[in-house]
Length: 303
Image (cartoon, rainbow, N blue to C red):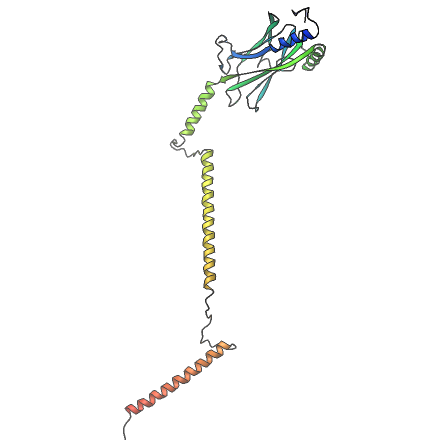
């Protein structure tokens, strides 16, 4: 650390305090812009347009760093894509090539360092913003780096990197974030045409018998049918209860199920009815006899 420009007169606690003060003023950040509009820093890119990813840091002299574990995600956690692995090598060089480090530039007791790469802009489905996140490993002195162009397998590179990391003293790990807006005119035009067709779905072409109904309208229709069905059931139940109540109230009035003059034998009512029939028969015979006698007296000859 002293060889990197730190005060050689400071020892022990004073050196640690100076290091902590320098670390407090240290910072790191990520920039994502269009490679064609690097100066203006336009934040809107089209799919396939060359994007420039730059990671910058201002760290105390004698502190090295290395970029690892870069991930692109949609911001909601539904989709993600690894770009740089844990040793700092690209997962897919066609998607995002490896980072190129620039020599540190001294600023007093600090060192300004940069790492950059260019890649074709991409996006996730139904998302216009792509979020990027990278991890920075801070080392005491230069951080070990793996030659990503080596033909060794990924496992061998990882093992070699871990051995070198053990030998190096890792001070801390920090993360840098940024996002870029990526648009696709072709997809946007297709969405606009689909939305136009959905808005004008009532105007069907001649011979087209297809009926398009949105999900909201379908749900509303089912809810309406359900309410109508429940109302019909309630009306039927009320009508049934009223009819049963009317029948119960009518059955309280006494009535005779048989005629009073039934001639059936074997019951008291039939016996009573037969007696009434006999009495009526006798009365009718007496009435006829009296009528005949009176008629004879009225029209008879006087002797």
